[in-house]
Image 1 (cartoon, rainbow, N blue to C red):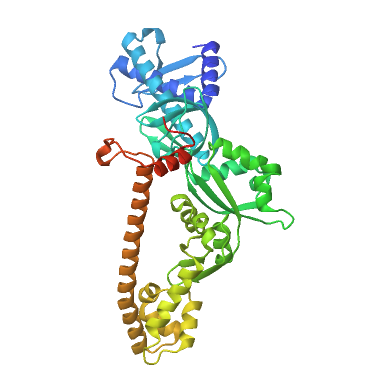
Image 2: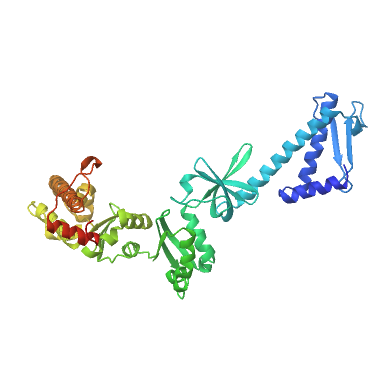
Length: 444
């Protein structure tokens, strides 16, 4: 061994981020293993080796029973001991590299990184990140997103695992913290903690809601996150492939926060029931579909953001619920109108709510006697059965009406019959005219 070998070790240490002293120590241990192999010794203390850190010279010796050391000429070691030394050295170098990767990427857990797509394996995306190939499980990918080999991939280091012979780095683009890190990268105020992301809910690939606040009253948290003419938010949306992002202002009041979280819908009133952890939201008819969102997405994300179960009603539905309670309870002996007001203040706005909270809340919060509270719960239980049946019938009628409308539309457009088989349809002149109007052209 000479200075050239030391230079090689220095290069390995730099490229693989391994301590040079550790590599030299591994090499010394490999030489000891070779000597033990040559002399067929099982004594781990019989041989020793030292490598000069400046010149690269190797000193190998054998401890004598009577004391002292016997120098061993490296040239006397045969081919098999040399092969043993090589195997030991390679194994120890791999262990050192694995430990180095584990330490390095363990510190980078939760960090935003940029890698290169390599390939897909069983649905998982393999991504080259610096010195290691990480993997992104299907569950951590944005639905519908595809990468080609060589594509740039920006992702979050979600987890680092020690898998015996290798280090596994789990990457993610679907985790909520990925959004958080993108905002830290694009919005300096978030990185500097002037603006804080207080809560977040996300459905990857579709929509994300964030509630933000500012520690500086001069900084508008929503405006800063959006940027001038939407420049900052646009960069994040582009990175996410067009995923919608709603940024709302955080408020310590749950009523205000829920109203903010349901934007862009306009909320008329928020009634909270702390006993049930439920918020009842009143919105105008023209705002109902906007508040619920496509397939319930808007209200679902708002519920996750705020930590409240959310029911959305129109004013007529809300009034109907209150009238149902009033009609159900007014005839009970000992029940007073003031009790009805207290129920409304507690957010109990349906017979189902009253039945669910039970006797203890009615006695402690409303001031009812236990006998009256039991009568109220029983009455609401019986009324609830009737209301539930009415709702079931209404839902069936609504479904039937929609089916009839769909069938009528299919008939008008000349759609196929059940089973997917097309059948000739006879239409009169008015039906043909309507079809032409809908399709924007004349018949063939």
